[in-house]
Length: 434
Figure 1 (cartoon, rainbow, N blue to C red):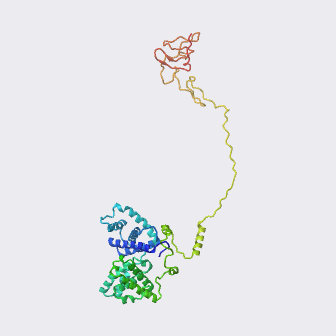
Figure 2 (cartoon, rainbow, N blue to C red):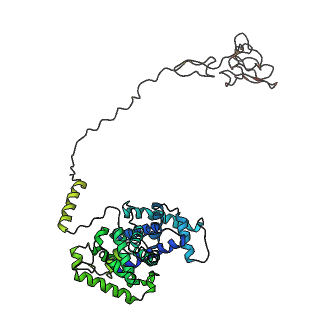
Figure 3 (cartoon, rainbow, N blue to C red):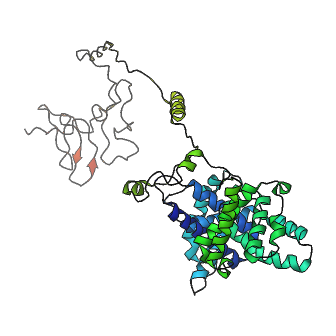
């Protein structure tokens, strides 16, 4: 279960760290065994899918435990799990609502989606606890013997969950392997449990021995992770391992029930994990379906077949077309006469009407002034000039104000008395001096 460029020893160490964290949180938060079992299974699948990726081991383990609490109906929030993880390592205790857990809470929620994709939405977990109880009660009907044996077998069951056995074997296989290994370690009722027929429990001997060797590898290489394994010397695990391997050689049974032929020929990794090219090229795998194809020609033919449906073949053609540019419209002629203008308003050029429509200036009163302004000067005469008749020279005598002009000069201006008189269109002319 390794791939080129990944150190299997380092990957196993990271996986066991995450599983051990889940086990410690189970004891801290007092979670049931089924929730711990489901969280470990989810974590195993996550590490297999994202093997050698940039994800660390702590955050995915917390996300797997949070997802297991949902699937197994264990009411635990993500903040409670993060708070329990913090309180295990620090002396100052925090509460789940502390602002310190805001950022880790978002990280756990984000990784939960990756965990669900790794499990392919399959949340089924094989729980061997009930079957283990039934086997112990059937083989050991005495209550005291059964209680003593089950007290020793249950820690082995919890340690077996830390291996890949829960995702490889059935519930009956795991229960039989735990019973037999417990009997060999404690020396209790060895003949009774080794004499069981695996076929009666819907399994075979190869699967049972494979599960036993997986647990023994955990005890031999990582004895510090199990409180139960610390009670025995390392030589005890080696002796049992030799006994099981001898049985496999005598009966010509393989170590693993399902293993490809290439892995049997070359069990070592295909490349050295110390190669710097592989160490720098490790990146997070992308999204999509993961398939394992061992035939290179078949893989190439599949790629060519798929490429036909995703590649568009087209040609770029350049066509030259001549388009006629329309002439610009001719400018408007300037030699044509302008339209007729409107008549001037009454009173001459004082106020002009609108062009083309008629309409003169404002109406005037009887004295010639613009209404509604009052007449400030003396009223005009019958001729409309407002002044005495002109003399022979064309100029009339001055009025009392000294500024009255004759008929030729028009009326307007200011008289000597200081009053204003309205002007007509001839008010700007100078009077002639005789």
